[in-house]
Length: 465
Ligand code: NDP
Image (tube, rainbow, N blue to C red; front, side, top):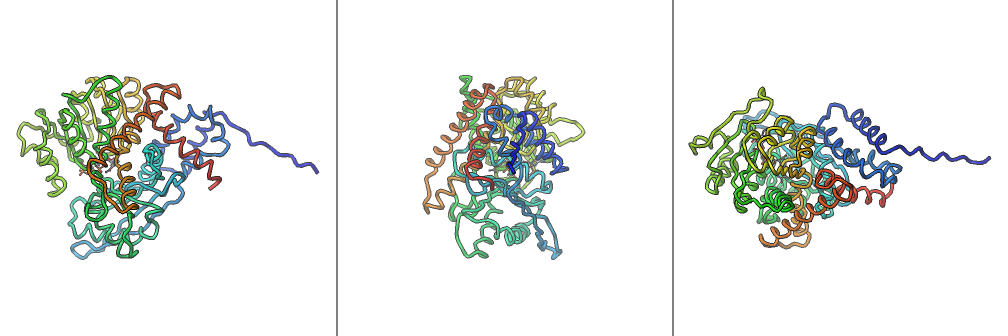
């Protein structure tokens, strides 16, 4: 009997993307941040699928939105009063087509599966853009280190790593820091990994300098974001000299964004935390930045104290009823959102545009809503999306992994030079890809498509896994 074969029906790119998006929402209910991150990438991929129907028939998109592995576990620990506390731990191993899973750990009370899936998804494309061989992952816990003692943080980190250590390794999955996970937490996590596995390997990045860390890693995300913005300004023959800059947050990314802006002659005027915004019309100079670093990294204080120390500065407490963030309503040339996701909504974007903003470079992950992004692109603002602009952090983590494998340490100048070159290369990829796909200047399309192609082709090469 003759065998009849039915070729699978090939859908139009638009239909295919809509169908996969519907599937993503159905399979991942109540995860709006994940839906948002996928939607933004899919909007750009409309331009790719016309030219590459093979991605449709190989169901690359259905596969790329599905994590390779999701780990979720209990993290019990004792607080200082001897009470039992229980948190939830996660690791999303999203995609390993081009290298071991790589991405940060976030400790914050808002952490949930959907937020970590959005971060892991973004990480896949970001890591691809760095030119280094790293897959994408993300993890963390709803544990909030704020207000906890060092001993409590240590006990939590040890319990968290006791479970996580079975799933990670220098050639498998290499976590790093993110919100709430800085040098202190990485130290406690590394110590426990080493103790249980009895091996001293590059299983985490962001380590201390005397035990395998890389120079410039703490600075890398902020420095890299400013290097990226410098490239964007160059396309309009402008520089940072004398430019007023808005920076949100006051953590790792914000601090080193401000430091590099000062190096390049700009005038940063804001910092913030979840309690409110500081506006210093005189500018945040090196002495004030050192004070902020001491406040946040050593004393673990609140940013409102800045206004007590520097009398000309104004503190504006957070007011959710306002519907917009007053930080983004201050007249400036450049904006560096460096706190958290969706911190710029449509109203904030409109305020920035009406005040003549020239550059928005995203240090935080997905700090702009889809509506805000659209407004920036329509207004022809130089807009550097997070997965390109903040890729300097993970790129330097990649450099830390290389140094660990080779058991050597590069100088500060060497790492900074490599970081700078990587950021120039990422900008070039985004800029040229945006042109190739018919949307010159649209670095959102450039970053999404540039990051996607490498991963998608590796997935095709490796078969159905
Ligand atoms: P930190 O924990 O060092 O600092 C975070 C800062 O953002 C703090 O000032 C914090 O204030 C503020 N913040 C956090 N959540 C909120 C919120 N809901 N509302 C207002 N302010 C908030 O984190 P990082 O600087 O490392 O990370 C900042 C952003 O950069 C994140 O989006 C992260 O994913 C991204 N990123 C970080 C990289 C890195 O290398 N560290 C790499 C790439 C991206 P408070 O203390 O009050 O919570």
